[in-house]
Length: 530
Image (tube, rainbow, N blue to C red):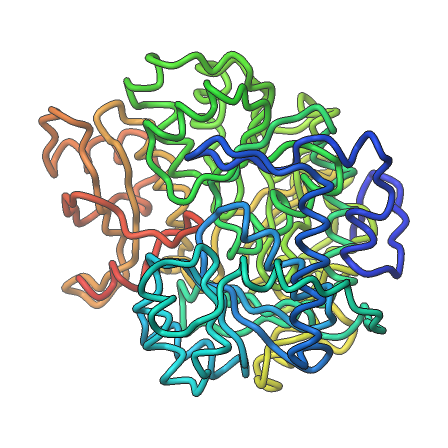
């Protein structure tokens, strides 16, 4: 077993609202909390808190409180923060819905989470209304954040109506260990499951992230990663508010808009996923913008190759970091600490978070793998125990028991190694390892190699059956614009740089690699293509 080289941090038993806003001074309240990156409109910490309180009061007047679940179906806009924290402020639970979901997918989540209310924006209204009807949510409980003619005509309340009703924040007892947030796992390897997180889980992970990430009150953070995903929810939204930093919201990723916002708002700290790292390292458009304000960037949600990370660092002139987590861990369990980034390899996910214990188990025997006195350990499944571990899967006791062992360790399903210095490297997903003639091939390793090819814009690898029944690697390749790249070029490149058993046997050129909103490759979609 191994723990963090950093000392434990204090984790208060307060609500998330009190933890984020309780220590703000009068001067802090007048600082800008959130900027709408599209319009430039600013919201101060004072205004944000007043709106959260007003919404919580209105919800309480409608009978919403502990035991109620409400859904939030919205992209990254300032109102997201108001609604998310307003729901929690009155003691209810919030389930965040993927902004790309269809009405059918949204209805399925609403029903599974037991949501009695739904908050959305007018561009999503038709999907939201259909989903609400399917889930039995009446029009008076479908709240539209920005009003809109369609919503008004349907008799739906707006966020402005709720805020102008004049209700004070409720005096309600909130159990910080009760279910508070129900995000859904991305479903890259199965159907999404509701992950039950408490306010204590979220408070703990913000405190742990504070010790690793190094965000300060002077930072300007670009919120491109979706708040409905746990990465954006904790490491962007909540961490920024706790530190008193400034958050710039971006509703959806567009490279030109991303670069413009970094330049115009002088963003200092970027939280990204590997697809954005690929663009920052390789796209010619990057050179057209002034990104000199960026001091650090942290990649998470999927493995980042070290060479790609160094390419981003060189091009932006910033410190590049990598972190690791999962929805079930609120999400962060590991990160390269900003304060000592040069001590840890960039292809690692850094060190274990404070207050966290880890161990590696042999995938074949489930025996614990020892931490070496020097060098790097053998590969094993990573298990994590700490205050950030979820309460369990909603209505899925069997899945919970299969994921959290009797000692409280969560099986991540990821294969990792650890060095004597405590640096953890994620090799691949346990279920995604390609098994060929007794060898184990990590798709992420081949993807990282392929991305070093100057004519490859993006890549993904899966295992497919060869004629002899053996599983072999197949690469899906997105060419750089204007590149003349063929199957033999790809196969030859991998053969030159990888062991014979890792060679790519099939290649398919595609326009784009399917990915989740958090940047994870959707291998199930690639497998469906064969």
